[in-house]
Length: 305
Image (cartoon, rainbow, N blue to C red; front, side, top):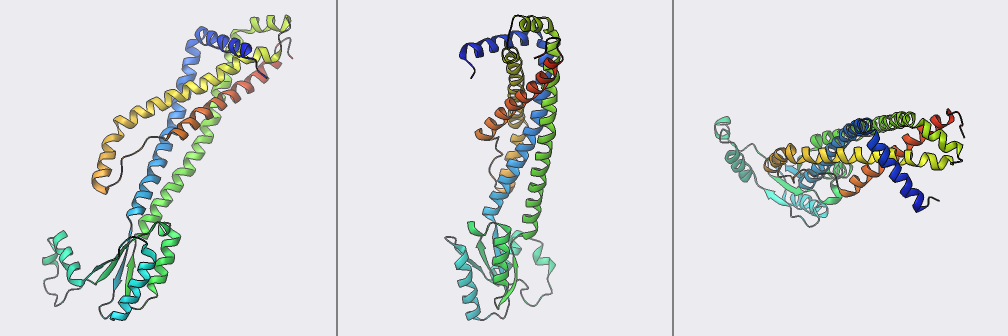
């Protein structure tokens, strides 16, 4: 178990080494920061895309178009079935006249498009907001299949196309982010390992003297392990800081546009648990990179353990 006195010594030696080789370690930290920033930006895209999908799903509605010759009993049966799935949300009935009025009020050209029609071509419909239990695509399809079998139903629309497209985009982004995360993690390990290797070269004489006077491998490795962990931590802090700045400067206008056009909430930065995960993950990667480099380098020393 690491003693507090040893940990204090390791940290002090690590900080001294960082100051002595500040350019080398600064370059390594910047490169790590760029790699982590790329991953952070991908995580931002995935997080906010999923958030928008959830918000759009919460606002999604099922529109059941009715046939012109529907009977009152059939209409009541459809309404009863909709109320089973609507939960606390009301089911709105839109008559043919109301549908035509809405069409002509939204699109002023509508009155000139069909001047020769003898009757209103738009069907009556029921509009029902999707309840939370039907937000998933599978549940919505089950509901649509059940409704479509009812007599008097001419068609059903619930935005299946854009829902599937949005979900596909989210899945592709998640897979791409996972692949990038794996590649960038290997890159961070490689950067830390090579930086520690160069640092060991600058202190070979000191390490050999420490071996001669009986210093243990644990005692020699300690400061270098701390250096690797600090590189990972500082690189992650740089990446998160830059990403936070970009989020507030570049994404604010986009967030306002999405809010005004689609009525969506503003884009969010990474939540605290995910930020903590990024920091902890980079500390672990720094440890792995330094341990890998130390195992190879110290075995090559004249008085290897």
